[in-house]
Image 1: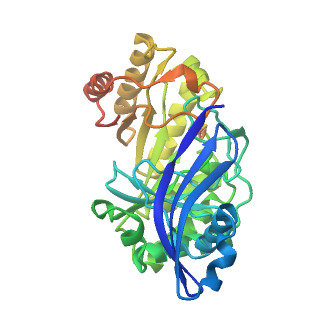
Image 2 (image 1 turned 90 degrees about the horizontal axis):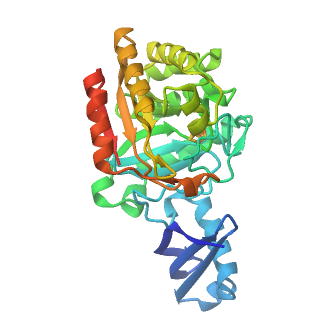
Image 3 (image 1 turned 180 degrees about the horizontal axis):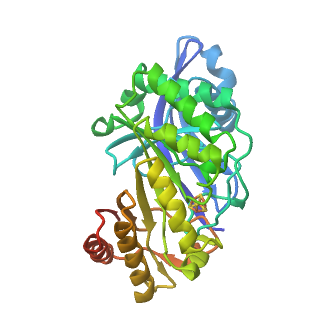
Length: 359
Ligand code: SF4
């Protein structure tokens, strides 16, 4: 089974345990889809050796204890976040995780409403491991509030940035509803937005950072989703609405959904009328073949149709395959050359919408 080195592979950390300081270099690895394993070189400095002895009996015991302890105190998370480290389990929280975004040039606080890894779509490039078909489970709003408050407190009032983020990225950019599944499938979606608004106000962040929803847009017709979008608009919010293909066959192949382009177009119109909206499009080669001319033409016609209908879409966020798919189709996917993306971006611009490219 292939060995995958997880992205937070090694680092140093220090922690007070009783009267002892511990310095460790740790490496974690995941065997295929199996369990996370860890190993560490540990050096202990203590004026009371007996205080640390129970923890050094075995590496794994030590790490379990240490992690439990760290996870209980967010400001002591030992991981240095990087732009490639998007592990959503990094804080040990259920709903909240921090990531460094190179594109945004700062830290994004992610809110994952799908800790069950469930989505109503099954995009072939999806990075969610063990993805299942389904919807978000009932959200424990009290827990979400507690986790988000703890995270914002560590960032705004604590030493989170200094301890865990490189100097050039120490800027809180946004809160992003971007989970291991479709966030709008949470029945409490509107209540979640209200809760985020309350915490933004509490930490003096209203209007200072963005609130981003990353969605496949399929559930926009739901009342609680529309109520949430209205509330988001008042909170400096924006929606990234997924459109990888503008043909029914392409949507079936890429997103494994039966939604048809006309229906998606209707939902896009509703969404953009409620909250500032960007299209988010991922392009890649399947079995070494780039999207066909017909696929590209259909997409460009969609863009023209958006402009003609004066749907207030802000533009297109055009992505390549930045990180590996965790789906069974992964071996069939490959990244397209940057020049391919740039050429397609130029044609989208010519069709009427601004484009931001992320390779
Ligand atoms: S919509 Fe998002 S979460 Fe759902 S399968 Fe596609 S990429 Fe994954």
